Each structure stands twice: as structure tokens, then as C-alpha cells.
Length: 441
View 1 (cartoon, one colour):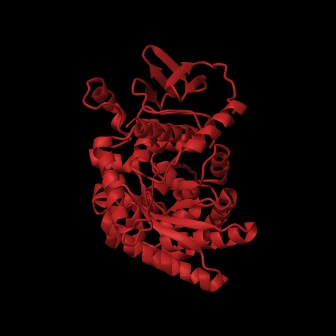
View 2 (tube, helix red, strand yellow):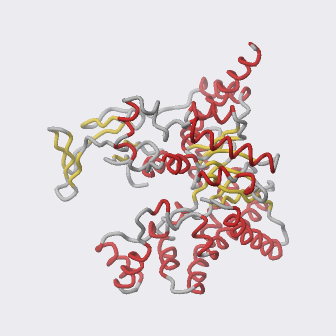
View 3 (cartoon, one colour):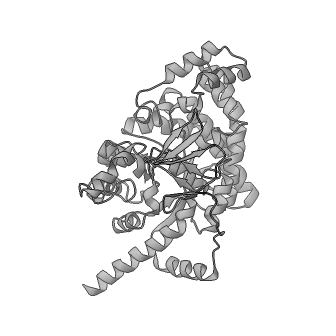
């Protein structure tokens, strides 16, 4: 949160850096491949222009422009006309619009922009706070389950407090909380200097820290030990998070008098067996919380559909999953076999040469990824007619993608808070077009 803007030479609109920046409302230009950054000399080179550390640049995240020097700017304001137009849009649309929000600040902003709940809370972002990262690293470095549970006990009250705030801000609106998703090595130091400093601060040997970093290193971490695979290997992590969610739901309900329904989402499911293994842990914790508090938490357990196999086997998974949220960022990666963090290097050539009509990470690939979403939605609802369906990738803020979601009958889209007004307007336009086509036929 210290950065006023983010500029990267790699990545693209849906790369991890861009997604995080968008969620924070931080201007970001990602994938500026024409730039060269020399970290040792503290220089940024663009053609024959050389900027050094301390020089000022201005970023326009909407246009993807980098301007030399300090450019005069104005603070955008939401006018009365804006509110009137949004009101008209809400009267017309049938598709719900939620926000991807990880912090109380995100949640408040989402409400200000008219979000009807949280469609994705990424719990790992809470772990990077300075008062938590030490406990997270203690958990990762633990030699056995008992030590891991000791470290997780330190995180429990922090996570619970986060969730209480989110539930209170949303005031009875749905809140979908995703269990830990990224590989554990993301929480460990990377360079030798960082390893030495962190080891010293934690009171452990540098050798132990380096050994664990090497042990968790993966060639392709985004297809490695992450998502539900972590919960299966270390079920105590999922149990701690489930307890934090359910205890928070009970507490928030008591404080506000509002009925709180938590939606617990298991990430990166490929098989029903994976989902069942994690769901059983979640439901067991819910029963424990009921016995301890005297109140039964209201909750749903569902999954992200972000692998082609999960979309194809959606009917089977829907036997016990109560909602699907299509993670279209990863589903696009795994369908095309393209890394979203590297795609900007060549996808512009694909679109320029007509190989692809547009970047599939920006607007959903209806014929491929879209068909998988539709297959998953149809097969899921064939088994469970009341299955709640939404998407939580960045496509949820793209007008063309929103129209597709309306056409196939999803319940909601979820996007970064700053894109919620776009999604509300796009959903209304999609509904209006649909009514127009129906009346003309």
C-alpha cells in the first residue's frame, strides 16, 4: 500500500500485479515491454530517454501511458447524474454485481460503488500484513502438525477480526471467502539477504530457512502445490480458516442483528474427491463452533471452477457443492495453456495478425473458455437446480464478458471495486438488448 503507482515491464492487464493494483485502486501500467529497468544502476530506459532514481513520472493506468514528469491531475468525483444513471441501470438489470474485496477498506469502497456483496475475498492477502507474516512463516517452517497448529492459533484471532469487519460492512449481503490459494513459498523470503534477515528476526538458522525455501520451490507454482492441494496436505490450515469464518459470522450476527451467511469457497478443485475431502473438514468445524457458541453458523460450501476438468465434471461436483464461482483468470490460463503473467509479450502480435480477435485475458473467449463456463453451469444445475453461479475473474468488469454471463444465466459477476459501476451498467445494457431482441422477434 506504500506505492503510489505500479509500473512493470512484464505481465499484462490480468497479471497478478495488475489484479492486486486494481483492487487497491492504485494506478498500474503492466507489461511495458519497451522499457528496460536496470536495478543495479537505478535507471529506467525508454529508447533514448534515461530516467534515474528520484525522477518523477506520471502513470495513466486506464490508457497504459507513462509520462515523463509531473502531470497535473484532478480527483474524480461521482456526480448526482452518475447516481441517477446507476439507479436506472439497477432497475433494468437482472444480473447481480459483487466485488472482489480482501480488506475492510475494499469492502467499504465496494459498497460505495453499489456492490451487492463480496464475490471473492482472497484470504492470503491478509497474511502479508506485518503483524501476521511472522506467524505465517512459523507455520510454514514448522516441523510437525503440532507446531503448525501452534502457529495457526496465533493467526486465528487476526483472521476472525478481519471477517467480522467484512460481515459487518456488508450488513447481511453475501460474502464469499476463498480458502488459502497460493503456494506457500510466496510467503517466504527470496534473496540471500532477505533469507538472512528473516531468519535472524525469527531466531532460526539461515540454513533452515534456506532449506525450506528450496524445498518449496517449484518449476511452475501456479500449477503446483496450491489451492485445495494445500488444504489436503495441511488440513489444519483450512480448519483454522473455517473456524475464523464461522466464529466471525456468529459474532457479526450478534453485533448487527443481521443474518450472516458465509460462503466458503474451495479453490482449484479438479475432482469431487478433492472437494469432499476439504468440505468434510469445513462442516466438522461448523459443528464444533455451533457446540461452543450455541448458534449454528449459516453457510454454504462451494468451489471455484478454474480448471477445464472441473467444468467438464461439474455435474458430479454439484452433488455436494452449493455454489460455483468461475475463476476465469485461471480458467483462461489452463484452457489456452498461456501464463497470464507472460502473455503480454506476444498476445499483441496475435491480435494484430488476427489470430485472436482480442486478448482472452481481457474479454472472455466465448468459443473456448466461455463454452467451458456454459458447460459447467448447465451440468451443475442439471444436478442442483438451485446452484448459485457467478464469476470472480477480472472478466467480471469487462462489458462484453458481462453480457455473456447474462446470456447464459449466471446469477452474478464479481470484479474489482472500481469496476463495479462498469459491471452494473453493462449488466443493464445486456438485459435491455435481450428484451429488445425478444420483442422484435
